[in-house]
Image (tube, rainbow, N blue to C red; front, side):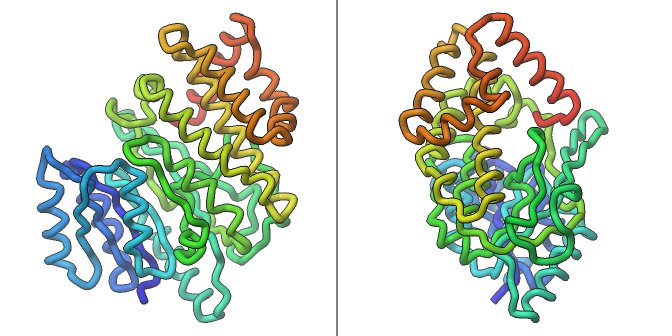
Length: 340
């Protein structure tokens, strides 16, 4: 069995997929690289995937499928993976070599001990290549380093930090056990990946290394603000899936529940802010009210807890001045942390 499966969802990615895959090839024979061609039709992505498989037949595997969107490509990877651990790396991103070595060393050590974590967490870096700037998201202040730990040993996350898809390397068995699935042709499903499986995670492991390099700044990216406003309904759809899962009620541990509530609050914040940004043209005020009412109907206990949170109170403001203040805070946070 391979130690790790990297799944690389590719859709017309020929221009930048080489840098991504080359970074993963540094792991060598311990890795399986699934290059999932999600129905590419505008460039030679499919051909490149086949070429990698031909050149590295014991490492790379090309998987061709009809277009179903990012989440469907990730799910295809989960279904086809043979590695002990599983990591998604988007085709325009890459992994830093020295940090990747630290990840593989940790996996090998824990495998020899027969004491495998369910989830390995690493740092990630926003790479704003066009501006020559970057910002690192580290968890050194809230997570124990270099050993297996429990949820109860986790510190408190501040509002600007949470575990994204980029930080997560799941044990494949745990990921499959969670039954996580993704809607087709929907953006922002990485939030489902970073949320639904968490209640199946018992043992965690943190490596304080800046491994995932998240390319950001292209106009066509899903996290571009204009695109997020345009795709507001997809953001709200994903938010509803998280609400429907009722994960806070399933959490076994105090800090696990606290973190899950923290993540859901972050999602409610994103949805609320982009409803405000969408304005009257997309009935933003009505949609913001609807998503909070949806939470109230589906999970009243979680609604009460989030609604009385200071951030929950601020996001539910009805006044024009209050909305303008919320957007101003969002702009300030974005300027500091550069998250889109």
